[in-house]
Image (cartoon, rainbow over the protein chains, first blue to last red):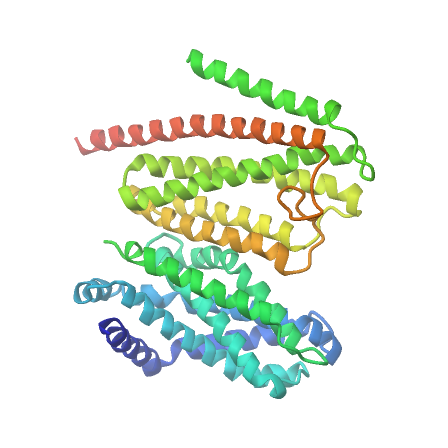
Length: 224
Length: 225
Protein backbone atom coordinates (compact mmCIF):
# COMPACT_ATOMS: atom_id res chain seq x y z
CA UNK A 1 0.00 0.00 0.00
CA UNK A 2 2.87 2.34 0.85
CA UNK A 3 4.17 1.80 -2.70
CA UNK A 4 0.99 3.27 -4.14
CA UNK A 5 0.66 6.13 -1.66
CA UNK A 6 4.36 7.07 -2.01
CA UNK A 7 4.02 6.95 -5.78
CA UNK A 8 0.95 9.16 -5.50
CA UNK A 9 2.83 11.76 -3.45
CA UNK A 10 5.79 11.78 -5.85
CA UNK A 11 3.51 11.89 -8.88
CA UNK A 12 1.83 14.94 -7.32
CA UNK A 13 5.25 16.56 -7.02
CA UNK A 14 6.11 15.80 -10.65
CA UNK A 15 2.79 17.18 -11.88
CA UNK A 16 3.06 20.32 -9.71
CA UNK A 17 6.59 21.01 -10.97
CA UNK A 18 5.43 20.72 -14.57
CA UNK A 19 2.12 22.53 -14.33
CA UNK A 20 3.78 25.46 -12.55
CA UNK A 21 5.78 26.26 -15.68
CA UNK A 22 4.17 24.02 -18.33
CA UNK A 23 7.54 24.21 -20.12
CA UNK A 24 7.69 20.59 -21.19
CA UNK A 25 4.12 20.40 -22.44
CA UNK A 26 4.25 23.58 -24.50
CA UNK A 27 7.65 22.90 -26.07
CA UNK A 28 6.75 19.31 -26.93
CA UNK A 29 3.39 20.40 -28.32
CA UNK A 30 4.99 23.01 -30.57
CA UNK A 31 7.74 20.60 -31.61
CA UNK A 32 5.26 17.97 -32.80
CA UNK A 33 3.16 20.63 -34.51
CA UNK A 34 6.24 21.79 -36.44
CA UNK A 35 7.08 18.21 -37.43
CA UNK A 36 3.51 17.61 -38.62
CA UNK A 37 3.56 20.77 -40.73
CA UNK A 38 7.02 20.01 -42.14
CA UNK A 39 6.03 16.46 -43.03
CA UNK A 40 3.17 17.75 -45.17
CA UNK A 41 5.76 19.17 -47.59
CA UNK A 42 7.35 15.77 -48.12
CA UNK A 43 4.29 14.19 -49.74
CA UNK A 44 0.93 15.20 -51.16
CA UNK A 45 -1.37 15.11 -48.11
CA UNK A 46 -4.57 14.06 -49.86
CA UNK A 47 -6.90 11.81 -47.91
CA UNK A 48 -5.67 8.59 -49.53
CA UNK A 49 -1.99 9.44 -49.25
CA UNK A 50 -2.50 10.53 -45.65
CA UNK A 51 -4.05 7.20 -44.74
CA UNK A 52 -0.88 5.54 -45.97
CA UNK A 53 1.72 7.85 -44.47
CA UNK A 54 0.02 9.52 -41.53
CA UNK A 55 0.20 6.66 -38.99
CA UNK A 56 3.96 6.33 -39.38
CA UNK A 57 4.41 10.06 -39.46
CA UNK A 58 2.46 10.69 -36.30
CA UNK A 59 4.30 8.00 -34.34
CA UNK A 60 7.69 9.10 -35.57
CA UNK A 61 6.84 12.64 -34.45
CA UNK A 62 5.69 11.36 -31.03
CA UNK A 63 8.80 9.25 -30.63
CA UNK A 64 11.20 12.07 -31.49
CA UNK A 65 9.29 14.46 -29.28
CA UNK A 66 9.36 12.04 -26.37
CA UNK A 67 13.13 11.65 -26.69
CA UNK A 68 13.33 15.40 -26.09
CA UNK A 69 10.59 15.48 -23.48
CA UNK A 70 12.24 12.83 -21.30
CA UNK A 71 15.57 14.67 -21.16
CA UNK A 72 14.91 16.76 -18.05
CA UNK A 73 13.31 13.85 -16.20
CA UNK A 74 16.42 13.12 -14.11
CA UNK A 75 18.52 16.14 -15.06
CA UNK A 76 16.04 18.31 -13.19
CA UNK A 77 16.88 16.43 -10.01
CA UNK A 78 20.61 17.03 -10.41
CA UNK A 79 20.65 20.80 -9.95
CA UNK A 80 20.01 20.75 -6.21
CA UNK A 81 20.87 17.08 -5.79
CA UNK A 82 17.23 16.37 -5.03
CA UNK A 83 17.64 12.83 -6.31
CA UNK A 84 19.76 11.94 -3.26
CA UNK A 85 17.08 13.42 -1.03
CA UNK A 86 14.44 11.34 -2.79
CA UNK A 87 16.51 8.20 -2.45
CA UNK A 88 17.11 8.81 1.23
CA UNK A 89 13.46 9.43 1.99
CA UNK A 90 12.18 6.33 0.17
CA UNK A 91 12.97 2.74 0.97
CA UNK A 92 12.11 1.55 -2.53
CA UNK A 93 13.75 3.42 -5.45
CA UNK A 94 11.21 1.82 -7.79
CA UNK A 95 8.71 4.38 -6.46
CA UNK A 96 10.80 7.18 -8.01
CA UNK A 97 10.63 5.46 -11.39
CA UNK A 98 6.95 4.66 -11.03
CA UNK A 99 6.07 8.28 -10.28
CA UNK A 100 8.27 9.64 -13.04
CA UNK A 101 7.02 7.23 -15.66
CA UNK A 102 3.41 7.87 -14.66
CA UNK A 103 3.98 11.61 -14.99
CA UNK A 104 5.74 11.16 -18.35
CA UNK A 105 2.92 8.94 -19.63
CA UNK A 106 0.38 11.58 -18.63
CA UNK A 107 2.37 14.40 -20.27
CA UNK A 108 2.83 12.44 -23.48
CA UNK A 109 -0.79 11.34 -23.62
CA UNK A 110 -2.00 14.86 -22.98
CA UNK A 111 0.21 16.30 -25.75
CA UNK A 112 -0.89 13.57 -28.17
CA UNK A 113 -4.57 14.15 -27.45
CA UNK A 114 -4.20 17.93 -27.80
CA UNK A 115 -2.51 17.44 -31.16
CA UNK A 116 -5.01 14.94 -32.52
CA UNK A 117 -7.60 17.52 -33.72
CA UNK A 118 -4.91 19.51 -35.54
CA UNK A 119 -3.54 16.39 -37.11
CA UNK A 120 -6.96 15.05 -38.15
CA UNK A 121 -7.96 18.35 -39.73
CA UNK A 122 -4.69 19.02 -41.53
CA UNK A 123 -4.34 15.52 -42.92
CA UNK A 124 -8.03 14.80 -43.63
CA UNK A 125 -8.18 11.71 -41.45
CA UNK A 126 -11.51 11.03 -39.74
CA UNK A 127 -10.79 10.09 -36.13
CA UNK A 128 -14.08 10.65 -34.27
CA UNK A 129 -15.48 7.18 -34.95
CA UNK A 130 -12.38 5.41 -33.61
CA UNK A 131 -11.44 7.92 -30.94
CA UNK A 132 -11.71 5.54 -27.98
CA UNK A 133 -9.49 3.00 -29.74
CA UNK A 134 -6.97 5.70 -30.63
CA UNK A 135 -6.85 6.79 -26.99
CA UNK A 136 -6.16 3.20 -26.01
CA UNK A 137 -3.27 2.89 -28.50
CA UNK A 138 -1.92 6.30 -27.45
CA UNK A 139 -2.03 5.21 -23.83
CA UNK A 140 -0.34 1.82 -24.31
CA UNK A 141 2.36 3.25 -26.57
CA UNK A 142 2.99 6.30 -24.37
CA UNK A 143 3.28 4.00 -21.38
CA UNK A 144 5.86 1.87 -23.19
CA UNK A 145 7.81 4.93 -24.35
CA UNK A 146 7.77 6.33 -20.81
CA UNK A 147 8.84 3.09 -19.11
CA UNK A 148 11.87 2.55 -21.34
CA UNK A 149 12.52 6.28 -21.73
CA UNK A 150 12.53 7.01 -18.00
CA UNK A 151 15.00 4.19 -17.36
CA UNK A 152 17.26 5.36 -20.18
CA UNK A 153 17.11 9.00 -19.14
CA UNK A 154 18.44 7.88 -15.74
CA UNK A 155 21.40 6.39 -17.64
CA UNK A 156 21.98 9.28 -20.03
CA UNK A 157 21.79 11.85 -17.21
CA UNK A 158 25.01 10.35 -15.83
CA UNK A 159 26.98 10.48 -19.09
CA UNK A 160 28.62 13.10 -21.26
CA UNK A 161 26.77 14.39 -24.36
CA UNK A 162 23.56 13.46 -22.56
CA UNK A 163 21.28 15.49 -24.84
CA UNK A 164 22.42 13.50 -27.84
CA UNK A 165 22.78 10.22 -26.02
CA UNK A 166 19.17 9.79 -24.88
CA UNK A 167 17.66 9.68 -28.39
CA UNK A 168 20.45 7.30 -29.42
CA UNK A 169 19.68 4.89 -26.61
CA UNK A 170 15.92 5.31 -26.79
CA UNK A 171 14.98 5.25 -30.44
CA UNK A 172 16.40 1.85 -31.44
CA UNK A 173 15.06 0.29 -28.26
CA UNK A 174 11.58 1.62 -28.99
CA UNK A 175 11.40 0.26 -32.55
CA UNK A 176 8.83 -2.38 -31.52
CA UNK A 177 6.58 0.39 -30.17
CA UNK A 178 6.89 2.33 -33.43
CA UNK A 179 6.09 -0.73 -35.55
CA UNK A 180 3.14 -1.93 -33.46
CA UNK A 181 1.50 1.43 -32.87
CA UNK A 182 1.89 2.39 -36.53
CA UNK A 183 0.23 -0.87 -37.60
CA UNK A 184 -2.66 -0.44 -35.17
CA UNK A 185 -3.14 3.22 -36.12
CA UNK A 186 -3.05 2.33 -39.81
CA UNK A 187 -5.88 -0.16 -39.26
CA UNK A 188 -7.88 2.50 -37.42
CA UNK A 189 -7.36 5.08 -40.20
CA UNK A 190 -8.49 2.57 -42.83
CA UNK A 191 -11.56 3.30 -45.01
CA UNK A 192 -13.25 0.49 -43.11
CA UNK A 193 -11.58 0.86 -39.71
CA UNK A 194 -10.84 -2.21 -37.66
CA UNK A 195 -9.07 -2.95 -34.40
CA UNK A 196 -5.81 -4.84 -34.81
CA UNK A 197 -5.78 -6.80 -31.58
CA UNK A 198 -2.41 -8.42 -32.12
CA UNK A 199 -0.81 -4.97 -32.27
CA UNK A 200 -2.56 -3.90 -29.08
CA UNK A 201 -1.47 -7.13 -27.40
CA UNK A 202 2.08 -6.55 -28.62
CA UNK A 203 2.12 -3.07 -27.07
CA UNK A 204 0.75 -4.44 -23.80
CA UNK A 205 3.40 -7.18 -23.72
CA UNK A 206 6.15 -4.63 -24.36
CA UNK A 207 4.87 -2.52 -21.46
CA UNK A 208 4.73 -5.47 -19.07
CA UNK A 209 8.18 -6.77 -20.07
CA UNK A 210 9.91 -3.44 -19.64
CA UNK A 211 8.03 -2.56 -16.47
CA UNK A 212 9.22 -5.86 -14.99
CA UNK A 213 12.79 -5.12 -16.11
CA UNK A 214 12.59 -1.68 -14.53
CA UNK A 215 11.22 -3.15 -11.32
CA UNK A 216 14.09 -5.66 -11.21
CA UNK A 217 16.95 -3.35 -12.21
CA UNK A 218 15.69 0.17 -11.50
CA UNK A 219 17.43 0.53 -8.14
CA UNK A 220 20.86 0.00 -9.74
CA UNK A 221 20.22 2.86 -12.17
CA UNK A 222 20.09 5.28 -9.28
CA UNK A 223 23.10 4.00 -7.38
CA UNK A 224 25.44 6.69 -6.09
CA UNK B 1 51.66 -18.57 -26.30
CA UNK B 2 51.87 -21.99 -28.00
CA UNK B 3 48.40 -22.85 -26.80
CA UNK B 4 46.99 -19.69 -28.36
CA UNK B 5 48.76 -20.31 -31.65
CA UNK B 6 47.51 -23.92 -31.80
CA UNK B 7 44.00 -22.74 -30.88
CA UNK B 8 44.14 -20.17 -33.68
CA UNK B 9 45.33 -22.77 -36.18
CA UNK B 10 42.53 -25.18 -35.22
CA UNK B 11 39.91 -22.43 -35.59
CA UNK B 12 41.35 -21.42 -38.95
CA UNK B 13 41.21 -25.04 -40.11
CA UNK B 14 37.60 -25.41 -38.94
CA UNK B 15 36.45 -22.24 -40.71
CA UNK B 16 38.32 -23.29 -43.87
CA UNK B 17 36.73 -26.75 -43.69
CA UNK B 18 33.29 -25.17 -43.26
CA UNK B 19 33.90 -23.01 -46.35
CA UNK B 20 35.02 -26.09 -48.31
CA UNK B 21 32.00 -28.08 -47.14
CA UNK B 22 29.54 -25.37 -48.06
CA UNK B 23 30.97 -25.10 -51.58
CA UNK B 24 31.84 -28.71 -52.42
CA UNK B 25 29.98 -31.07 -50.10
CA UNK B 26 26.56 -29.49 -49.67
CA UNK B 27 24.26 -30.30 -52.61
CA UNK B 28 23.13 -27.49 -54.88
CA UNK B 29 19.79 -25.94 -54.01
CA UNK B 30 17.20 -26.39 -56.78
CA UNK B 31 16.02 -22.82 -57.39
CA UNK B 32 18.69 -20.53 -55.95
CA UNK B 33 21.64 -22.68 -57.08
CA UNK B 34 25.13 -21.38 -56.25
CA UNK B 35 24.06 -18.29 -54.36
CA UNK B 36 22.25 -20.37 -51.74
CA UNK B 37 25.65 -21.57 -50.45
CA UNK B 38 26.15 -18.23 -48.71
CA UNK B 39 23.43 -19.41 -46.33
CA UNK B 40 25.91 -21.66 -44.47
CA UNK B 41 27.97 -18.64 -43.45
CA UNK B 42 25.13 -16.12 -43.28
CA UNK B 43 22.91 -18.06 -40.90
CA UNK B 44 25.83 -19.58 -38.98
CA UNK B 45 27.28 -16.09 -38.38
CA UNK B 46 23.88 -14.98 -37.16
CA UNK B 47 23.81 -17.85 -34.67
CA UNK B 48 27.37 -17.14 -33.51
CA UNK B 49 26.57 -13.43 -33.17
CA UNK B 50 23.47 -14.22 -31.14
CA UNK B 51 25.49 -16.52 -28.88
CA UNK B 52 28.00 -13.70 -28.33
CA UNK B 53 25.16 -11.33 -27.43
CA UNK B 54 23.81 -13.94 -25.04
CA UNK B 55 27.24 -14.14 -23.41
CA UNK B 56 27.19 -10.34 -23.21
CA UNK B 57 23.77 -10.42 -21.53
CA UNK B 58 24.91 -13.05 -19.01
CA UNK B 59 28.07 -11.05 -18.28
CA UNK B 60 25.96 -7.91 -17.80
CA UNK B 61 23.68 -9.69 -15.35
CA UNK B 62 26.67 -11.12 -13.47
CA UNK B 63 28.28 -7.69 -13.29
CA UNK B 64 25.16 -6.10 -11.82
CA UNK B 65 24.98 -8.95 -9.31
CA UNK B 66 28.66 -9.49 -8.37
CA UNK B 67 30.34 -6.19 -9.38
CA UNK B 68 33.47 -8.00 -10.48
CA UNK B 69 35.33 -6.05 -13.25
CA UNK B 70 36.01 -9.30 -15.09
CA UNK B 71 32.30 -9.51 -16.02
CA UNK B 72 32.49 -6.00 -17.40
CA UNK B 73 35.50 -7.03 -19.50
CA UNK B 74 33.61 -10.08 -20.75
CA UNK B 75 30.56 -7.91 -21.51
CA UNK B 76 32.39 -5.43 -23.70
CA UNK B 77 34.42 -8.18 -25.41
CA UNK B 78 31.39 -10.25 -26.33
CA UNK B 79 29.47 -7.17 -27.50
CA UNK B 80 32.29 -6.28 -29.89
CA UNK B 81 32.69 -9.84 -31.16
CA UNK B 82 28.92 -10.22 -31.55
CA UNK B 83 28.82 -6.97 -33.50
CA UNK B 84 31.51 -8.28 -35.85
CA UNK B 85 29.45 -11.40 -36.59
CA UNK B 86 26.20 -9.49 -37.04
CA UNK B 87 28.07 -7.16 -39.41
CA UNK B 88 28.97 -10.25 -41.47
CA UNK B 89 25.28 -11.21 -41.43
CA UNK B 90 24.28 -7.74 -42.62
CA UNK B 91 26.84 -7.87 -45.43
CA UNK B 92 26.24 -11.45 -46.63
CA UNK B 93 22.44 -10.92 -46.50
CA UNK B 94 22.31 -8.31 -49.28
CA UNK B 95 24.84 -10.31 -51.36
CA UNK B 96 22.34 -13.17 -51.28
CA UNK B 97 19.28 -10.94 -51.62
CA UNK B 98 20.30 -9.22 -54.85
CA UNK B 99 20.15 -12.34 -57.07
CA UNK B 100 17.37 -14.00 -55.03
CA UNK B 101 14.98 -11.07 -54.52
CA UNK B 102 16.34 -8.62 -57.11
CA UNK B 103 17.15 -6.01 -54.47
CA UNK B 104 19.94 -5.63 -51.94
CA UNK B 105 17.80 -4.52 -49.07
CA UNK B 106 14.18 -4.57 -48.11
CA UNK B 107 12.69 -3.08 -44.98
CA UNK B 108 11.08 -6.25 -43.78
CA UNK B 109 10.81 -7.22 -40.16
CA UNK B 110 13.73 -9.61 -39.84
CA UNK B 111 16.27 -7.49 -41.72
CA UNK B 112 15.19 -4.39 -39.92
CA UNK B 113 15.24 -6.18 -36.57
CA UNK B 114 18.78 -7.42 -37.12
CA UNK B 115 19.81 -3.95 -38.13
CA UNK B 116 18.17 -2.51 -35.01
CA UNK B 117 19.94 -5.13 -32.91
CA UNK B 118 23.22 -4.09 -34.50
CA UNK B 119 22.43 -0.43 -33.73
CA UNK B 120 21.57 -1.28 -30.11
CA UNK B 121 24.97 -2.83 -29.52
CA UNK B 122 26.69 0.06 -31.31
CA UNK B 123 24.89 2.30 -28.80
CA UNK B 124 26.05 0.02 -25.98
CA UNK B 125 29.67 0.59 -27.02
CA UNK B 126 29.02 4.28 -27.62
CA UNK B 127 27.56 4.67 -24.14
CA UNK B 128 30.73 3.18 -22.70
CA UNK B 129 32.85 5.85 -24.34
CA UNK B 130 30.74 8.61 -22.77
CA UNK B 131 31.13 7.65 -19.11
CA UNK B 132 34.54 8.32 -17.55
CA UNK B 133 34.35 6.63 -14.19
CA UNK B 134 35.05 2.88 -14.67
CA UNK B 135 32.58 1.50 -12.09
CA UNK B 136 29.75 3.71 -13.26
CA UNK B 137 30.54 2.93 -16.89
CA UNK B 138 30.48 -0.78 -16.15
CA UNK B 139 27.21 -0.65 -14.22
CA UNK B 140 25.25 1.65 -16.53
CA UNK B 141 26.38 -0.07 -19.71
CA UNK B 142 25.57 -3.45 -18.16
CA UNK B 143 22.05 -2.20 -17.42
CA UNK B 144 21.64 -0.86 -20.94
CA UNK B 145 22.94 -4.17 -22.27
CA UNK B 146 20.28 -5.98 -20.27
CA UNK B 147 17.52 -3.74 -21.64
CA UNK B 148 18.89 -4.13 -25.17
CA UNK B 149 18.94 -7.91 -24.88
CA UNK B 150 15.37 -7.96 -23.60
CA UNK B 151 14.51 -6.37 -26.94
CA UNK B 152 15.87 -9.45 -28.75
CA UNK B 153 12.87 -11.77 -28.19
CA UNK B 154 10.61 -8.90 -29.26
CA UNK B 155 12.79 -8.64 -32.36
CA UNK B 156 12.30 -12.33 -33.09
CA UNK B 157 8.61 -12.01 -32.32
CA UNK B 158 8.29 -9.39 -35.02
CA UNK B 159 9.01 -11.87 -37.82
CA UNK B 160 5.93 -13.92 -37.03
CA UNK B 161 3.72 -10.95 -36.06
CA UNK B 162 4.06 -8.77 -39.13
CA UNK B 163 4.36 -9.54 -42.82
CA UNK B 164 7.85 -10.36 -43.98
CA UNK B 165 9.78 -11.14 -47.11
CA UNK B 166 12.59 -12.98 -45.35
CA UNK B 167 12.58 -16.75 -46.00
CA UNK B 168 10.72 -18.52 -43.21
CA UNK B 169 13.10 -20.10 -40.70
CA UNK B 170 14.29 -23.46 -42.05
CA UNK B 171 15.74 -24.60 -38.73
CA UNK B 172 13.16 -24.99 -35.95
CA UNK B 173 10.69 -23.19 -38.19
CA UNK B 174 7.77 -25.48 -37.53
CA UNK B 175 6.05 -28.05 -39.78
CA UNK B 176 6.90 -27.96 -43.49
CA UNK B 177 10.32 -26.41 -42.93
CA UNK B 178 13.66 -28.20 -42.81
CA UNK B 179 16.89 -28.89 -44.62
CA UNK B 180 18.02 -31.77 -46.79
CA UNK B 181 20.19 -34.09 -44.57
CA UNK B 182 23.60 -33.24 -46.11
CA UNK B 183 22.77 -29.54 -46.11
CA UNK B 184 21.79 -29.91 -42.50
CA UNK B 185 25.13 -31.53 -41.60
CA UNK B 186 27.09 -28.84 -43.46
CA UNK B 187 25.03 -26.12 -41.82
CA UNK B 188 25.60 -27.42 -38.30
CA UNK B 189 29.30 -27.89 -39.05
CA UNK B 190 29.43 -24.21 -40.14
CA UNK B 191 27.61 -23.24 -36.96
CA UNK B 192 30.23 -25.15 -34.96
CA UNK B 193 33.15 -23.64 -36.93
CA UNK B 194 31.91 -20.07 -36.60
CA UNK B 195 31.17 -20.60 -32.93
CA UNK B 196 34.75 -21.76 -32.39
CA UNK B 197 35.95 -18.66 -34.23
CA UNK B 198 33.69 -16.52 -32.07
CA UNK B 199 34.99 -18.11 -28.86
CA UNK B 200 38.59 -17.70 -30.03
CA UNK B 201 38.09 -14.01 -30.82
CA UNK B 202 36.21 -13.53 -27.57
CA UNK B 203 39.01 -15.05 -25.49
CA UNK B 204 41.61 -12.89 -27.25
CA UNK B 205 39.54 -9.73 -26.86
CA UNK B 206 38.85 -10.53 -23.21
CA UNK B 207 42.58 -10.97 -22.59
CA UNK B 208 43.18 -7.56 -24.17
CA UNK B 209 40.47 -5.93 -22.06
CA UNK B 210 41.92 -7.43 -18.87
CA UNK B 211 45.37 -6.12 -19.80
CA UNK B 212 43.87 -2.72 -20.47
CA UNK B 213 42.19 -2.78 -17.06
CA UNK B 214 45.43 -3.77 -15.31
CA UNK B 215 47.29 -1.06 -17.19
CA UNK B 216 44.67 1.48 -16.14
CA UNK B 217 45.14 0.53 -12.47
CA UNK B 218 48.92 0.89 -12.71
CA UNK B 219 48.59 4.21 -14.52
CA UNK B 220 46.27 5.57 -11.84
CA UNK B 221 48.61 4.45 -9.09
CA UNK B 222 51.52 6.18 -10.80
CA UNK B 223 49.51 9.35 -11.27
CA UNK B 224 48.48 9.31 -7.64
CA UNK B 225 52.11 9.22 -6.50
